[in-house]
Every structure is written in C-alpha cells, then in structure tokens.
Image (tube, rainbow, N blue to C red):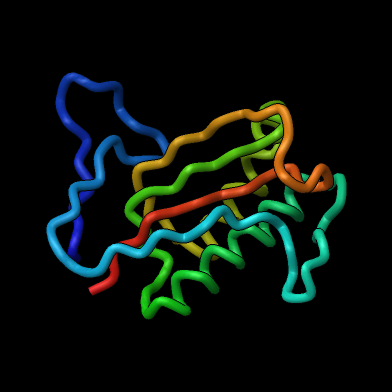
Length: 133
C-alpha cells in the first residue's frame, strides 16, 4: 500500500476514520467533489439523504476506478453535508452504503456541515485523495 493510516497515541480513538494518512509512494489522484448526480447529470434521491449518499458512494468508486485504483486507495475523504441531523439520524443505512463500497476501510475523513452546495437539490458532496500503485 503506498500510504499508511496512522492513529497516534495522545489523540482520541477514531471511530469510522483514521487520524493521519501518510503517503509513502504511488500516484496521487485528486477526485473532485462527487455529488449525487447520475450519468445523465440528474440529481438522484431529491430530498432523500440516504439515496444521495448511496449515489455519491457509487460515484467515488467510479471515479477512482477510472484512475486505475479502487475504493481502498482513498487516503483522504472530505464530506460536505447540508444537514448534520440527517447524517446522525441515518447512521445505520449510511454505514451499510459505505461498507458496500469501502468495506471496513476508513481513511482520514473530515465531515463538514455547510449551508448550501453548488446545486441546491444536493444534500451531500464528497471529495477525495487516492493513492494508486
């Protein structure tokens, strides 16, 4: 693996993420923010946070595979959501959707609540940095 995930002593135990992604080799791939758009550019799951999350997971997988990688090559994910309560209230289905793509792999993840995304029908967008051998 061209990067190492590190959880240093002295920081709180991470749940669902790693504290540090140390890149040691490979090709760095920056994946632009993936919103819940299908291949026709239509918003999937308007008003449905879980459906939008599922589409974004699929888009992240498609994007990294196009660069020759796989989901477990993501070293960093930044998640932007417009409704933190929707995230908290749907942890189980979101976890299931995450595991379909990433399994039990948890890179360095940041979750940020924002007022609005570029498309007002989108409730979530995730960008990432992958390291591909």
